[in-house]
Image 1 (cartoon, rainbow, N blue to C red):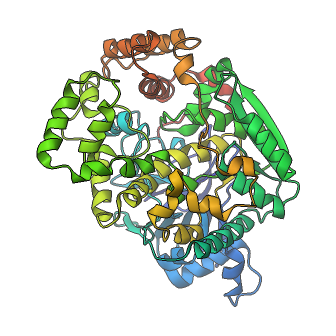
Image 2: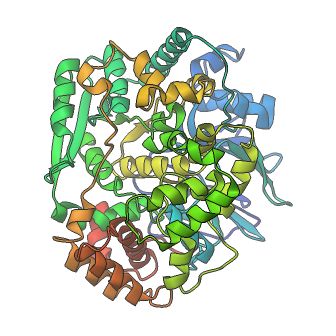
Image 3: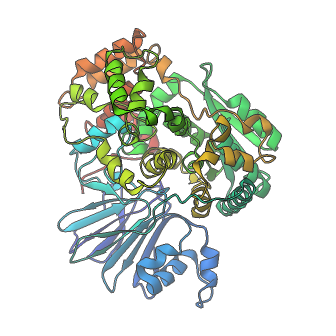
Length: 601
């Protein structure tokens, strides 16, 4: 467990508990230390400042050179800068971090989270107290569900930030900092936000800039004496990372996982890639019984429910990596920055609908309503006549509002999933359709799903995740690329692929994206069908769901009526989360993690 946990409260009377001990306390501010916690506090300037940093500041050497204080360690450099710049320190930092500084003299707490949200930052603010932590379990205040968050989770498959599934515990959003004085509420400020500003340049110029930014970022992210590895699938993103990292670390190890089901493993591709790059590859096949056994640990590590099945291979890949390395590189962010999702090509395929008069669109809408679900052409028509702002909320869209109203007992009509994206579409109103989709994903999907599972699954095995694509300098280049260069020639990430020609092996360069596929569709019909039925039956969530509706989803899936696997998985992951954190089950399964369930504070 990395991270930190602390509190701000006048005359705080908390003492040590079985799962934590107070390692600093001055009546108004305290810091907890947890077993397996690797992040330590530092005191500077006659103990006026206490600093805790979870993460890495990659430009610390440059920051140190600008100081006149002589030799300083990394935390001291940050304290000196903070004493000079106060909140503006965030403008100087280049890295991934959750940062806290307590000014004992002025009685002010300062906290900040990195621009993309690679590192998590949770907080609870009450009337007389505030708790903060890099781990949600550390500041658990109650078992009260955030029902609004649950309603949104059922569509997004994650809880959109800043909310969590627990009432009153929130996340500090990426690119934000806060200040907290003893006599006032938190003041939260946005200091950086991703924005797209396409410019006209020759392809060759973009290629040079992309190459330069990637090499610089990967060199920065691998600047450590600790053993370094890299996840390696059969796709281009992880291959780019491994190919360039190998130039700085010739002894780089790569890690791959897959499944026995045909079409759900890229281990053979990864092994061929590793061979051509001249790096070691360590792989593992995952069986259904493996991850059924580990699911409680996976959900416990996530801290909030997340229904992305890719958590499973990531968990096992990180488990293998932990046996060999301390740091692992990964390709998160490449798709959002360089247009890598196939759905980003959708606006092109739907262009003809832009030229249809409203009368014709109305007729098509009525036609689509009469067509049976699953019939070829129905979805195409529905997407074509639906504005982007209503049809696209990110890479996952599980349950519609109508579906949720049929089985979620606490459904609120006024709480649409578009409530999450409406302000983002307003901010990006001048963008073309593809940039809008990228903007939505960066500010919802990337932080709520992609980075959550990557950070939590690696953290579960004490492996430090590095994501070189998610670097401000890399994004600066990516934000300038016109959309047409990302989806040119009938592909995705066109200009990125051009930039790495000759760097990555040819057999990977133009492969279609597969990602980390998980055969839950097949397993929920076969090996896991009885397991899923048992989860639904035993879950103490009858007050939340009409279970008859869920059983029908499972029956229809089993009988090949519909592919309900993602919908079922979304509900099942929440039920396991509820069993762990609310019903307090699975304690035996979690015992192997050498941890305890959260306690009220």
